[in-house]
Image (spheres, rainbow over the protein chains, first blue to last red):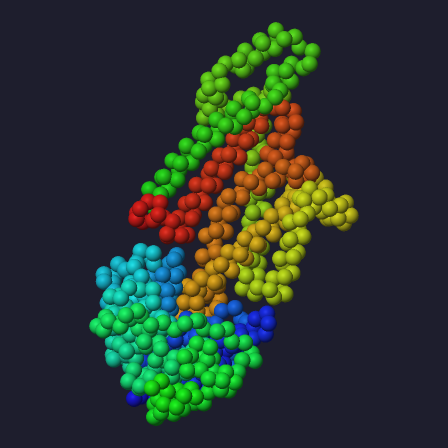
Length: 323
Length: 312
């Protein structure tokens, strides 16, 4: 394992709403080391994307209150001035998004958009263009030269995601944040994109923070896993910790909700209900209303953090977790 | 791109033929008869018949239309029933005046409205946005003729800075253009603002920021560039509309533009002149339409392709 690259401590994000504050993310802690792939897993609305966007100060609307620390190379990302975070974006931390279909500007050629980032480092136009073509080759773009001259609507979803990856890798960032990079793509394209992301880590030692709701994808690429529920981290561990010994009821329920081909287990299991809306004065475990093991204690007290091993921890009252 | 432009021009010509026919027949559906007006109320019916024959008004509508169109293609818009001089001589001196008014108004209006709207969108609900939106709302609510009169009262009569009416020097144009700019300003600011807000919410703007672009570059190269698509179309579409919008203002300030001429010709039932002016405004509309389509094709690559099926 390499050196520590990013350490997030006590990250809290509250949205100002009419009736007070909506707690989107609460007390989130995790860290990423160089060359490591960290997966943040959870249902929609768990605050995964919010965490990712907050790291680059990309939360929209201006009604979010962000507290805590996100130390990246001795700088707190959350408190950087506009000019300083602009220097980090794309240069040290790249980010790709959920839907490659509308993440590219429709009026410029894709190559122009990739080159635009490269030119921030005062690279002459022609050299930037050559680099774009090379990057397209790196992300296995077929016909890279002419694709660079294509507009986004002339490319397929998979190709557009490749453009996004090329764009965000152009300046060799140390960390790539991938916010559900394959959700909008079909399974074969998903596999190709994941291969590219993995190759990136192997070839350039880039750390990747992968946000997903898909445990299958986690098993395939991740080294470390953070399971989030309703803005809380409920369990963290290595990919082996989580898959061999899921401790938190939410983690194991999520895993049971994975479709399997081999065993015929009848109907696919689901978790009833949906992620609750958490406002200021909420107490107890946030998963309590959907947890099959919930007791009175869960509804009145914050569950403790239980350390299973050096790498594995979860927060729940149940001893021995979901066994 | 060439096919796209040719297609648009072709469609424009078809449109022009249809509209010119409507303009021509519309006048003939209206009550009143040019000959009665020319001859005066005391004329005998049999004399009127002679006059009608002389001007060719007793022929079938289609024949008259063909005759009219052939004439126009040769630069002959007919004779004014009222003044008995060629219509073209009356109209041609007024076109430049009207165009000068509208184009200058347009440029000033957009030069103010686009940056203001963009800034309002970027700083939504901040002080500048609130002041601009509310002020422009009040200005829209004021009719342009009232605004013109107030401007004359304050700046011409009261302060004596500008002449009350006429069109000889640049000073004569200041007040009418101000009235024109003010009356259209609010809608343009609001269009720019809402368009820019839409673009600001697009995912590709987040991408642009995530790439590490400085804010200023995101705003000009991405937000402004993409908002311009709708704004440009609006600019071209409103140009002909502005000419008719200037009718009242021209009248108040005594500027002999097309609008002014059109108003008096309608009152005097000088049909040939009215027809000519409507036709000129129609031609301008069609030309602006084609221009806006071409500019749209240049600004938005998606449109180019949907029209020509992949031709670049």
